[in-house]
Length: 156
Image (cartoon, rainbow, N blue to C red):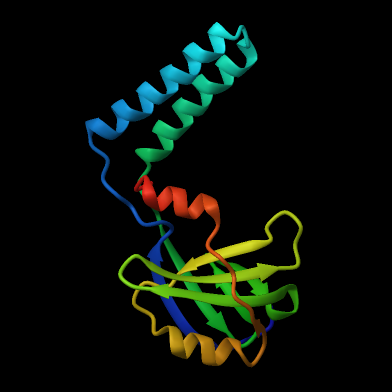
């Protein structure tokens, strides 16, 4: 493996965890039951099964605790938990920084199945990150995805 210089390195939770109380799980259950009842009324049984599986998956994911991930910006690329995204395989970046809730680095990849990589910056200085990345990548504004906005709204 080639040697490369680590310029920035930090650890952070893979996602911002919000403790969910009984009310949150009740809400998921009520919404799931509502869609399930609608699917049964419309005699769409496949959709009814999908709603139950989806509701269960949302509740299960909501109770999941985030694991700690190691991030690094190196002379060759960006590493996320031992996976190196080389600068050659990245198109551009954007730092979405609006503390205290939004502190993310977005990388757009050339890969078809993982076009956007979101990296939490936590307490890392975004200006230093930006200065380094500008040497290798184009900076282009990237809007926060609708999924991320909805997830933050529902404290997911």
